Length: 81
Length: 226
Image 1 (tube, rainbow over the protein chains, first blue to last red):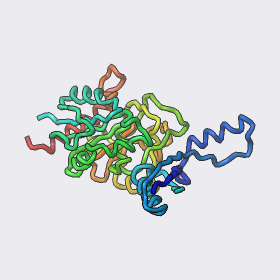
Image 2 (cartoon, rainbow over the protein chains, first blue to last red; image 1 turned 60 degrees about the horizontal axis):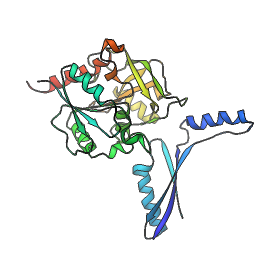
Image 3 (cartoon, chains in turn green, yellow; image 1 turned 30 degrees about the vertical axis):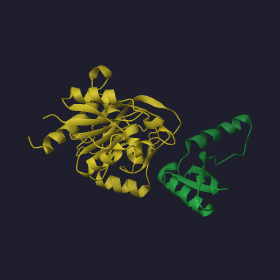
Image 4 (cartoon, helix red, strand yellow; image 1 turned 120 degrees about the horizontal axis):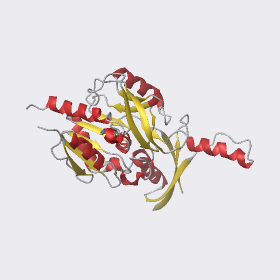
């Protein structure tokens, strides 16, 4: 079976996110008040061959640990469709 | 016998010629090593130069760590050989797990290309023996991702062992503890964001970078029986 997996990679909580901070500072200039805790991450979408959804998730999580994220500073979340 | 230096060239490296020129001027015998080779030639020192290895796609150094030569680079250090990673080379060493921590985007999101001062926190290493403890070196930086991070317990462990080798006197990029360069526990691997190869001739504004390469050459001369 072929499954589509999306991976969200975010900087870990507590690690300063200069991109998020810059966006947060820019929004009030456009009149968007009341915005806080802006965090920027990346989304990676891939198609994987696997026996079942659990197997697909396990494969993608291994990819995240080895390549798609840097576990020192980033966390990841895998969604399999 | 002069020290043999292998400069690893990745697709996207762009400081290899500067390292070649700087180290040959100091009397070493540098040569290039292609990243796709699986074995290093017979060298005493390995340099991972600056640049944008593999386009820095995904994350800086993330793809380069899987280049075939990297296993041989790790083995070289395990056997006591010296490895220095400069700028992108430092990022590659962190991604490869050969040095602790990671390099994030600069605080303030500015690409920084300027001269900075770094103080030598530990002069008792193969990379800084020519300098005095506390000596301030004038060396340029040129990076977008130089904002060093590691966890508090890792930082404490590194400080206790003297692995924090260089610190900025005026932190330009948000690095934890103003760290500019660190070594591994065995002091065989050194990573730094400043570019010592660009500060080896007075014409360029500073010769302080030569202290780092000369220290390494001294170490090789001492370890190899004549």
